[in-house]
Length: 232
Image 1: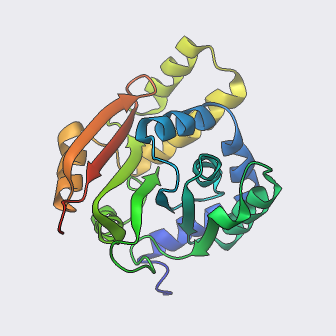
Image 2: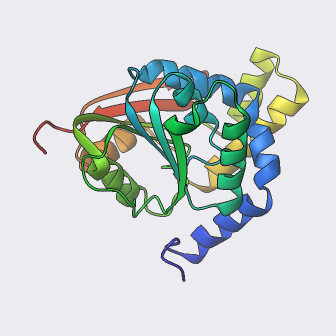
């Protein structure tokens, strides 16, 4: 098994994303996922010139959003086709400075960067999905500078098909957007969903302090961030 994967399950998930890279890229480009990304970016609110790492960046939608806000962005993912999509969309975005964003192929559990390389390291819909969430978080903390921030976006324990249908009905979302969120609900039911104490413990075990967590998207999603202790 390649060092890019830790288990056959990891490889199978990667394969599904690879064969559906174009569909996945278009799916995430608009609708409730795009609104949630922008809300998450606003919540983190990094300053201009922040050195930012997007772990499991996929097609790079969030990475481009931060690049438009004058951050210096690196995105990493295991998917070749997803990274090609990320590069193509980045090159076609007139608001993105090509010198301010780059994409690299790497596993989240073994990031190819020295310690203290980034001011802000983020992972959206990654921790709940990977086979080794604790290892990914430890790597994220390792490459973040002392005093820097690690941020995550993952499902709350209540996210499932029924709760998503209720949310979509309340928001009067159309069939397309409802179907997209239901796809995420199915994935969440098969992976990890977090009560507050579970996610908080995972973040603290990775070495983060001053942890802040908020429920968003009608309470179905966690926004979380913590700080790497100064001098660590």
